[in-house]
Length: 264
Image (tube, rainbow, N blue to C red):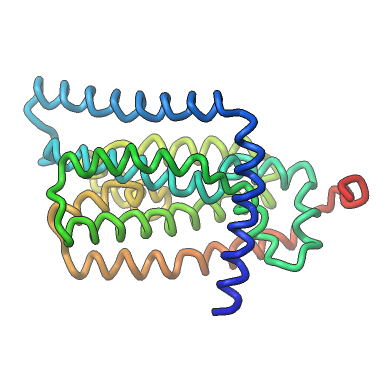
């Protein structure tokens, strides 16, 4: 418990520093908020129009699509709050040899690499997805509990896979491949996995974990299943362990950028 408390305190410290820095760019923050609203609004409008013309697809209801969009937006926003730009930039820091700075710190270099970018201002985007979820789901203790559970599970699984994906940088030596792979995951995550063939669904639940950014949560929010909820909880608990092991294996291949002196 002491270790968890120390890391939580460090995360709060990162947020305080980044909060003060972000306040100097309020216009950019407001711009991101507007883009967030437009993105969600466009997806809702597109799917509403699509369902109005076709009458549905693959046994998926419009309510399930709305829940998927809500979960997808909130899960990414939650991770964006915890990691900030390091969601995308971690690989570039590794390539440029700037990982040295985190290796000499007393805390876990993996934790500091990803969570030092924590940006609390982006937590406001969580309100957009939450409002969308509340608009389509009845506000009961069960629906609220499933919502919080789905978001926590999604953040844990997606965050772990991000760490694994960035760990590929140690082996590939090219962060562009990592960015493209992340873009593929986010692209498929915005669509219900059930509309794809069985083979594609297997990929979306394993190799490319896009289904855990909305599809799985939306299905459980509408028709909860105890075995599936237990499976999601187990996956959320084991994913960070696997991610940490995979990243540490990659660290053995890291070549120092010798930037410690310049930074200090």
